Length: 209
Ligand code: CDP
Image (cartoon, rainbow, N blue to C red; front, side, top):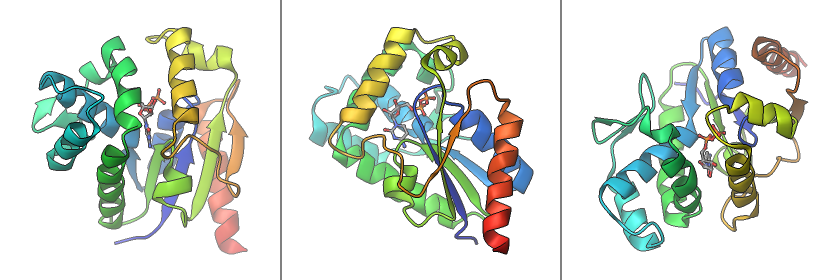
């Protein structure tokens, strides 16, 4: 079991998932997409007809769910891999992710899961370096120009991305923030493998110093 964590945060379309997967692959570590967890919870809230704004009911449900993110995203055994990327979920997830009870439930699962991985874990999201793993081995904050981020997220409109970014950055509980000790990387015009290589190099040089 390993305590090694690379925590990667950033806004939508900054390259988090692709870069995090590539880093995990280069190191032979596990990978966790925490956004998929919030999206999967949102699918189940809507499927059950629960009021999105009923924090207590949504939080209680989040506590009981069985979630998987690999090889496919599922909630209570139901495959939601495609559904999590729909416009309906893009809108509703901002409400569910702002719910402190949901966040508490997801954060404890994320910590437990990482602890059980044999080597290290690369975790990506919005609050990973600031809240979930404040003692991570390496913290990274990715960004890219607004145009590039919209291009990468071709399935989501620029207006929807901007709305989500604003909701994520201004919410009270665990807003999207760069940790003060995070490595900042602008991924505009850079290939994911190149950015992943920079992160792996940074990890290695910190370990040898
Ligand atoms: O892929 P993209 O960056 O567009 O989004 P995502 O990582 O799938 O996350 C979807 C939404 O979940 C975000 O807009 C946040 O509201 C929320 N989220 C969060 O609050 N905390 C995390 N650690 C990860 C995602």
